[in-house]
Picture 1 (cartoon, rainbow, N blue to C red):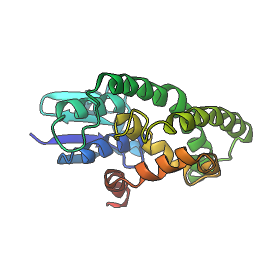
Picture 2 (picture 1 turned 120 degrees about the horizontal axis):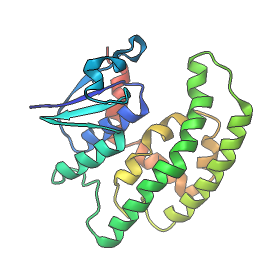
Picture 3 (picture 1 turned 90 degrees about the horizontal axis):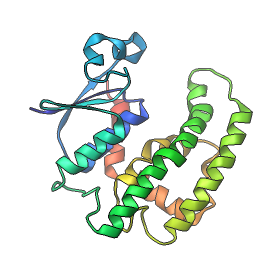
Picture 4 (picture 1 turned 90 degrees about the vertical axis):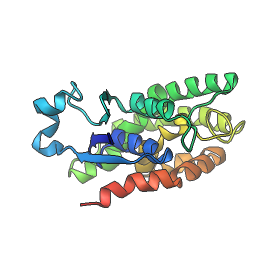
Length: 214
């Protein structure tokens, strides 16, 4: 039975999962969840994700939700296919565990708030909260200083190979790269090189192509 991804092409969490599937070159069916019509709150969808959020993934009789849990499942269940995404070396496995948590708890909360203020609010005709931008820019500076030091030691966050720790950053990096805070990434040479590298991966380009379909 083919893998099904239920989600929205404009959802950062959905794009994270789709990128992981493309890294593994796994065929899947994409099922669009029309959130504007409330499709994510129907009983049918809540059976897949009880929180009524996207995405959800079906792999046969296995049902998953929460994008990072899904990518970890994909990387593990299809470990032998294409890009490894997980480290086997003990030291690099520890690094992967650390930097995956850093993305989820240090980078993403700040990056998501800035993307909301500087990108999404414009789409919805809403006014940017300058104070929120200033507050989160200051937080992002501190995070990126840590990243710069880390990436001076290795090409990627968990070592010299691309892993989930890097992939999980792609959605926020993509949207932030079109805003004024791009300068914060550009002025840090190792962070800048890392961003250009991972944003240029074919898997991410294929994930973004979802937004041009239909």
